Image 1: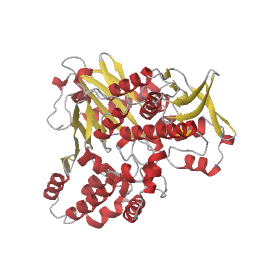
Image 2 (image 1 turned 90 degrees about the horizontal axis):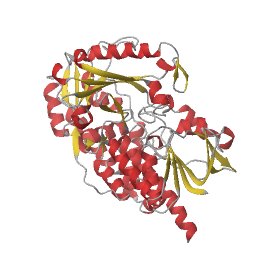
Image 3 (image 1 turned 60 degrees about the vertical axis):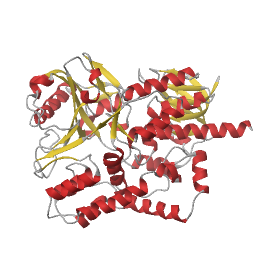
Length: 510
């Protein structure tokens, strides 16, 4: 049997793509290495608690609803908006509020900063340009939608596109330096935290649009529940889903895909292969270099970095033992000290920003009665843990002890803002960059797509199509910017990839 499409990876983009193709009568095989669907957008269970493997919530809720309705899921879903707080020695603010309120609060906190309203006015103009770019900008489209957008191109749209290209090339720090003086304020507006601004002006506008205008939301089904609903659609319409099945190789002949070979040597043939693995894993591990027709393409994939990984501590706790008075939102970003150091001490969290999420505030039904779930997350480079990795899911001696030692240090610093935390812990689980690599299937444990730093401008923002005929990419890494946030962007790529396949099938059947 030759499938119409084989999809590698049951993450968000792969799931949407599989369901939409199956719904439209295609023979679909979805192959997943793990024992569950959803990729890192799912949950795992420990001692009566269910914890999230990756994203805690998502933005652009109406777009998510649109993608679900596109595959026939119309069941009502409640949404809870998440808010975000930053506490440093010089600032305590909820920054997920409306722009007008945020601007007013910052002006009171920094009365000498006359450039605040000018900066906000400029940022609003940029957000107005990028707010709905997925509806009109050809570089964020694929297949027929891209052709229609190109056909509608006029002088006004072209000027708008040129402005977006300019935003992508400008470091956000340059604009902040132009209008503001206080480093605490510049860091907040440039990173939504205490770190120095490093991203492009385009990515900064995307972040503030998500944070203050679109909002970040948790669905009543849970993000894992959304994937369960998508799976039901795929199976109902005949898609096959194979779990616990690693793909070893994408089979290519004369520059075109022919199928895939699994780790145990089974070959499945197909007209299309759609990879929900990330770009580096797909082209550096699943394809022979001689099968990639453009050497520059592979060189660029190797050279452009991904975002870093993290250490994540999952805690099941007795909330009555914790003093919560300083935590005023579901997500708190905390930095105990701001003293600059010549070199970051990765084994101390006192001088670093990290996230504290009261997960059970979103999902009280996923914890035991009268209990709570707390998640601590701190950015971490993969290289710091790499020497502990002997092979896939194989660690050298001392790894468990070291990660528990690091978790204990993170908890100790978190207790500065949440007194009583250590005594409240019932259970604990720890994920490291190695976890994200081997269980999450992320190259070097990356968690948030391609680098958000300013990089060379490129014509295409969506990276679905590849130099190999009938090989498409979906998921968070199939976009150079997370213009809808990670979850909705992954859905967007999955939907567009299915459109490309369906359009070619329609043209052949005529």
